[in-house]
Image (tube, one colour):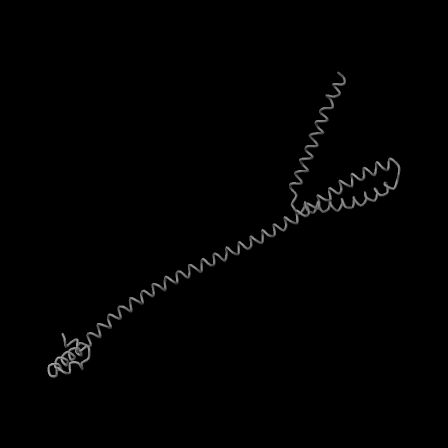
Length: 203
C-alpha cells in the first residue's frame, strides 16, 4: 500500500512534466512557423558555421584520443566519432537547405521575370486592340466617304449628260437637216457622210 501511494503521488508530477514539455514544444513550433524565410536561412547558415567549428574542435580531440592506448581513451574516441558523424549529418542537411533555398530564390526570380513579361504583353495586346479599333473606325469612315463621293460623281455625271443633250439640241437639228438635204440632192455622197449622219439618214 505504501509503495502504491508513492507511485500515485509521483504520477501527477510526471503528468505535469509531460504537459510542460508539450507546451514548450508548441511554443517552439510557433516561433519556427512565425519565422520568415530569410530568418530561417540566416539561422541555418549560423548553425552550419557553428557545426563546422565544432567539427574541427572534435576532430582535434579525436586525433589526440586515437594516439592513446588506454581503454577510456578508446571509448571516448568512439563517442567522438559518433558525434562527428552526427555533426557531418547536420552539415549535410544545412548544405541541402542552402542549395534548396538558392534554387527557390532562382525559381522566384524567374517567376517574377515571367510576371513582368506577361504584364508587358498584356499592355502591348491592349495597345494593339486600341490601334485595331481606331483603324477599323478610319476604314469605315473612308468607305462611307467613298460611297458619298461615288454618289456625288454619278449625280454630277447625270446632270452633265443632261446639260449636253439640252445644249446640243440645236446642233442635232442642224445635223438632221444637213443630212437629209445632202442625201436628197446627191445620193452618191451618202457614203461620205459621218457614221452618225448615216445612222440619222437611215431613220
